Length: 247
Image (cartoon, rainbow, N blue to C red; front, side, top):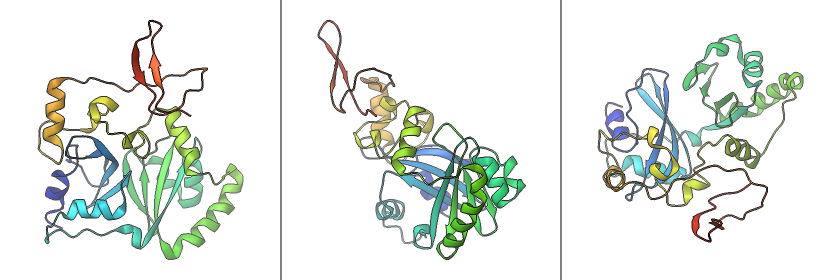
């Protein structure tokens, strides 16, 4: 609708000047400036599609509506399912499955493929595509994927497996470290936020930025098996941090 840009701009952390078919990473912040959801914001002609992780569908829709009767928010999860493809040969498989046009699809873009919407993003360090498919077509799509996928060793994997690949490549996971009450400064996600506009949580974030980050998340590889929330102690016996997540 006509107000779609204004509604998104007051909620999403990034600048939203997108051309048609472009996507952008963003965050959803709480009042304290903490990251609570991981977003892809996608422009589809005059509409916007938001893909979110770390927040329930109902909570996300309520956040966008925010009591504004002029806002028309459609929960696509009622009529569509999502199938994700990840891996070094995902592009080759998708070209065989949906046609060669997808080979040239740029990173962070969307396209329409025979009733489906294909989002090229990826959070595993390899090629990644998310396919938005009408529910009544999902069974036939899966069957065709299985047939085409025989030549590519296509396999079903769990969300935990995808999360492990994502973690190894240091992608932000809103369902993991995104639930620990940390903000873009601590998570190294300032590239996803704008300090030139106002949006939900921006005042708190700007205040924390002026004070300076007291903590910073880093990725480390260790031979030790450290449980989540364990303290990290220096040789001098000083606590220098804590384990946010370990795999």
